[in-house]
Image 1 (cartoon, rainbow, N blue to C red):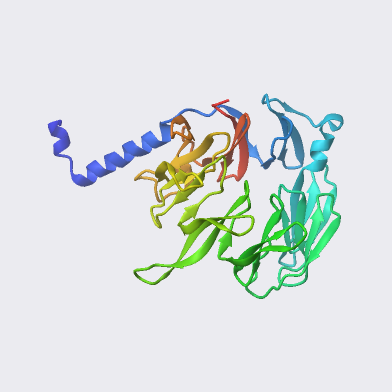
Image 2: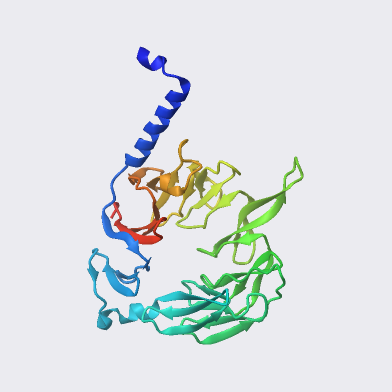
Length: 347
């Protein structure tokens, strides 16, 4: 070791290490290939090779080749008609919701205290968040079902339908309804996710055998409510592309991936992950310097199911890489709250 380094004080050495780490964190990785700068209010999902983007009152279409074009109603009408968005107004300090399509046609009036718009064919609304029936509409706005649910001061809602099921709650216990409004899984869980590929993650209160204290732990259930994976995980993702993200730690929360038989495929080592899709997942490391800071300081990487690091993104302060679809990866600027697109480096 160089003698001059030996005489540097401990505080100075730590400071230099942190500065070096910060510079490495901010400059390491591969640069983004921007398709749309992070300056749009909303970028919708791609359908048939195109997606709508909004900025203020203006709209355009972005295509799978990256071309941005003006709206052409002869070509884009069906996309704009079928794509829905939530509308919000504040009246007398009360927040009310409605639904429009991208043609700005009203699907549901803006009068509901609760409203859920999911990718499935149903919309779920309630005129009062603390009483009255739950209303189920099709995506044209036609009422198809009213459901009465016992609701008290602790009621926190119905999630909206995904793959034919919606979670609902009675007095802080969650269960599932089918699209006919029938209870198919009785409320018994502390929390639940959506049914994805036939399985849903669910949380139960378990007790520590040593201390006797209650703990929240995740497991996996099937569409009949049978327990497929027992309730022992502090974190669990959806069952997607044959794998499930999981963690067994409370504080440091390293996350890995396992199969449905609980065989560990990728050992826990990431600070945050997205579910696998088409063999690829977006994951992020946390370092000593930025572990307790916001996500924009994290090292975001694309991995395959063998945990090969296929691409690591260069850090740009304030920019979060969060969603991958076809040729593009969606990014979010947490300061301006705007969305953008970068080219998927693996396509």
